[in-house]
Length: 493
Ligand code: SF4
Image (cartoon, rainbow, N blue to C red; front, side):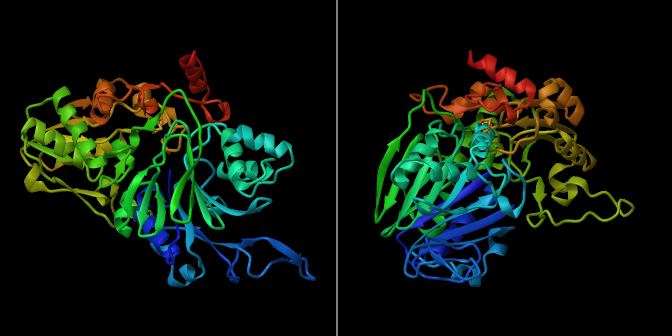
């Protein structure tokens, strides 16, 4: 999963992209990168421009005064990757950036984005959120034609398709390239003087346009606009390719598809609650999930407690609908990163307590409704239930604000393989037994969709594939487990 951000026509472009990425950090914590474009020659690794000759040692010379793409990227968090010095090496009034959580390609620097390339249509930098379902097929075909890849990222495939396109200019080459891509992409592409933003025809991943004075920005989520003080203009529509030039947005192309498939998991878990995603505020949607969950699975209890932070808004909705008081009975340590090294088992096994600690005074002797957004393997839920009981909870009734997760995602969310998902092989009663809860209730698929869609919107506007098994699109069997490929084929017929 990833976050993308871009801005054009602002003298502090790179700094604003840095802030945008900072706000989008929840969408990817493995690597962060920013590319900018200017006519300045800066000595920096990875700069891309039009070569006008070469030195005696064979080094290509970039023509002075011609547009160059500057790039800085590294593994790690945005705040750690970008120092003042790094940002100063990103001049120019347009820039794009990316935060990455690996879905296609491994977690390593070569897969970090933006990807920059000197093409026959000029220098470009591209940042991509999503996953191409035909990425492996395209890579094989391009490889057979002689393409050389520097990464395992499916985004690099798009770069090759642009470079190899026979279209006479970058805009048409991009449209040509995207017409060959199948699957999820929300893209920002930087070129001298312009940014292109594109969303796949199913619209799996969000992408929004904003304005800051004379500058136009594009972001995965609106929370990034809030941070830089930009106002939201509108979403990039599903299938739309827009060109941002000067102070305006022009629709360059509109791809069509028979339906949209907006990822409902963005609303369940992934997006920030203060963002507006697919036209709806995420916090409000989560509260509606919780209220619907209370209607579908009521229970006599004393207190509603969320698993923080993912269950907070759904728990508020559940508490409001049921009339049961809401309490923060579990406190999360926000400073736990991946750097926590568990001491030797001999000292003690910390487990979930490193992240979550119960408030004994709010729990002891209570019948608890425990709300979380999903159960993946079941092991964390089991530990939390056990911990609450150790702290004196009389009963723990687990409620989940989405349906059982039964399948993986092929469109850019890093869910585990099917065999690791407890709901793929266990009934709800078996899961309840495993996590040792007194009762367990999941939000129904109908209830979830009903909570997020407006009355006049089509019922299949949202992708629910990891819950329902109805995958809207696939043609890359390499990306699928064998059982899934069969399911998909039968679902499509
Ligand atoms: Fe979202 Fe699940 Fe569909 Fe993936 S399969 S796009 S996570 S709803």
